[in-house]
Image (cartoon, rainbow, N blue to C red; front, top):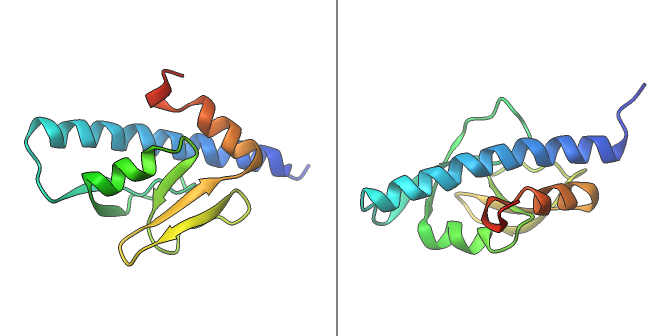
Amino acid sequence: MPDSTEARQRRAARNQAMFREVNERLEQLGEQFGANGYQQFVCECAATECIVPIELTTDEYETTRRAGASFIVAPGHVHADVERVVLEDARFTVVEKIEAAAEFAHAHNPRTGS
């Protein structure tokens, strides 16, 4: 039986939420060790096998994290069936989850204690 759109959206959001947790920890480590300027994060795209590094400033990361359904992905790593592009930069793209994926992303936002 083919995957439903909602099931694909939730699976993609679950994968991205996992990468978001990794990046939250990377940011904390950067703060502990006094990282200045650019810091390494991992692509938060829906592909579970993706490990593309992305360089961001803490401000760029924090701006994205203000919205619980937003994720930072490498250029070209957008999955249009589960997200829409909010911002494109030469180094990264910010996407926002849609529909069921957005619900899952908000529900599993580490900054809201979910």
